[in-house]
Length: 349
Image (cartoon, one colour):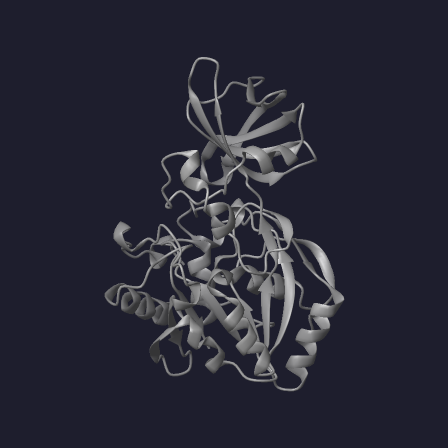
């Protein structure tokens, strides 16, 4: 398939810049795969679409404050976003500002600096050379991020200064966030509140937690014409024994596996064996789900509205159909849904 098959017009005016104060008041578009029916609801209505013995599976990764604002001695400013951890002190990063030089040192706090070691290719296969840097912390570890870092918001969410990121330290996290290490959030989980969770649990629906450390790879643009030529970056994930048991038990007695987000979908599909059972597993996945993929592990998917031409849009189009997703997105645009990370969501059943 061609990348143009997944394009659509996304007005800047519908891109949410902040989450709603009451997150469970977000709009929820229910998409029925068998009939193509669309239903306009609120997220607080979600429990009405679940019943025992369904199992809800969430991603419990926690976003670290992976963006650093720093200044050169010359007065020039840099915005550094960590995207992949290589070792305790070495990271790959993106840099906004005047291009660094290999070996250049930048002070980020008293007694702490980073050293730009080398520039690498963002996507050599697609002809995008350079743009990715390997950097090293000197005189400090990544723990310094807790003091000086801010939330690594995607570029379509605009903040003019480090001070404007203050609320994002908590807002760019899900209610399930426990395991630090992600540099982007599993945004489908943003809509959950304690009252929604309590109602879900009271209905007898079980919950399981898995971990996928969301990285730049989840959101990296597809830079090739044929989507089959795109390569996903590896992302670390973990499914423990308790989660595997809960999911397999629910399935065995007729329950649905409801994936909260594309990261959960990729995790479960990566941890499923040939017999269709979820295994206790820790590893890294570069699974790229495109139309034609046969899902083995999930029966329903909660997800936000995604960027045009993105791998996330390709995944949701695989779970129902591209034509139905286009219909749903057109409906959402016509009915003032809020798009992308801080926006509204859809439930595909």
